[in-house]
Image (cartoon, rainbow, N blue to C red; front, side, top):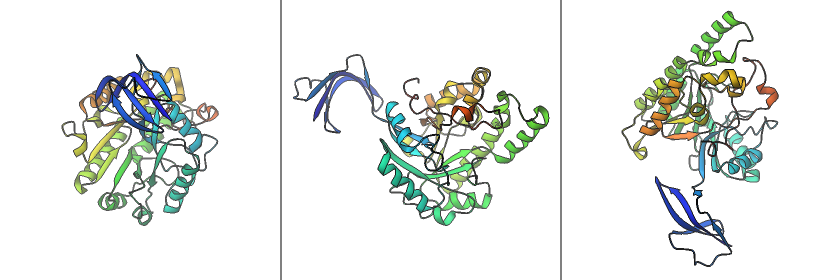
Amino acid sequence: MKRLIINAKIVNEGKVFEGDILINHERIEKIGNNLQSTPANETIDAKGMLLLPGIIDDQVHFREPGLTHKGTIASESKAALAGGVTSFMEMPNTVPPVFTQKLLEEKYAIAARSSFANYSFYMGTSNDNYDEVMKTDLKNVCGLKIFMGSSTGNLLVDNPSTLERIFTGFPGLIASHCEDEQTILSNTALAKHQYGENPSISIHPVVRSVEACYKSSNMAVDLAKKNGTRLHVLHISTAKEVALFDANTHLSKKKITAEACIHHLWFTDADYERLGTKIKWNPAIKTQQDQNALWQGLDRNSIDVIATDHAPHTLEEKNNSYFKAPSGGPLIQHGLGDA
């Protein structure tokens, strides 16, 4: 089965040009400017349309196993394809969390049966699973996820000796969620003292503050520099953090990279009044100044990746009060189309 796409505006490797693409079964056979006479079973005239490579989303939460009332690998990978995402890297905070190689293999088995897109999974880490972490097969696994801030269950890694050991010993990519736990706990206690158990969602960027993000990201970057670790810092949300990352080195030579997420590029703290807990994410959406810095970081190549942090919940869960509503939201189907 051959399909021919003609007159498309092709976006690839930093260039935009008009051309034709011949697809033979599931593989691109030829890209050129004058393929219209090539025999094909189907010809699609894409005049005026963009044709892009499939997107790779390096941070998603597909909820299987254990949280399948929110989504499954099958349902969320379908949403991925609808949004132009053909490959995803999924996080370990399912139930149970992926702290053993056996649990990691079980996720791969689920995906082999049910995923509609290409996939890889992160190994999870805790304060006490170092031996399991070091068994990770990096030929098949995209990296190691560390939550250096409060998260679900035992996923928080806050033991300095454990962090040092992992950053020293793990041979692959470490992807880090950076928010300082003690800062968040202190801010939470103060918020409850001032506002009680049902404060406005607008305090979220005060509780999960710039200082909490920067302190943790700075620690991760320092550990990576000290140990020569391949580090990827997820969902940067503050102007202060952007300054931690190198804008002058080509991506192929960077050992420390950073990511911005769609919601931090779309929304600011001015949107909490209108959208409430629907835009509750960790790290929190912050100020217009922070958002501007993220866009500048992308433009200057100090931020290297855009991701969705796709994390579905039910509307009933999201419609809870501030402290009870979970953080996260579904974005994988909308990240490209609405960008």
